[in-house]
Image (tube, rainbow, N blue to C red; front, side, top):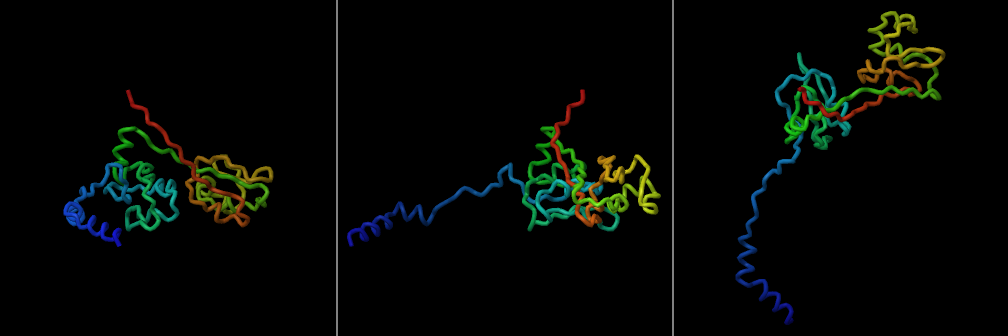
Length: 201
């Protein structure tokens, strides 16, 4: 009983009541390092898909064709606000917090490309990947009709009974080859490397 009385007296002290009912907290201020969901800057998107390539969150961003222009669409339900899409965009189409200011100050950027990998234990040398590739068709128009290519300018071709990768640097990452492979023997992997831009003298 004495302990209850003690607590009641303690809680009814004027200074405690004043602090409890008139407590003030500092106003909420967004910290400078805060990254919000990416938003558009108004600059024209060229449809290079660098933002989609680097995004680690499946379904976080998609570049859509809107009438006569490309436009990135951010999906907050999937976006993790890492800011990588903002850094990867070569046209500064996206912004988030201080990301653009920091990359300009530090002169950092991303270089990206695609890596093609063929699992020869699964590949049955059907050539579907080579024939379906849109870049291959562009480089060798006869490829679609004959199923084979003698051009050294194609990305890949069947050679010596195997799929040979000739020009990986021409791959645009469309994954048509991967989609058309019946054995899932070919994989298109996105590769990203951080680089520091040298200051021109």
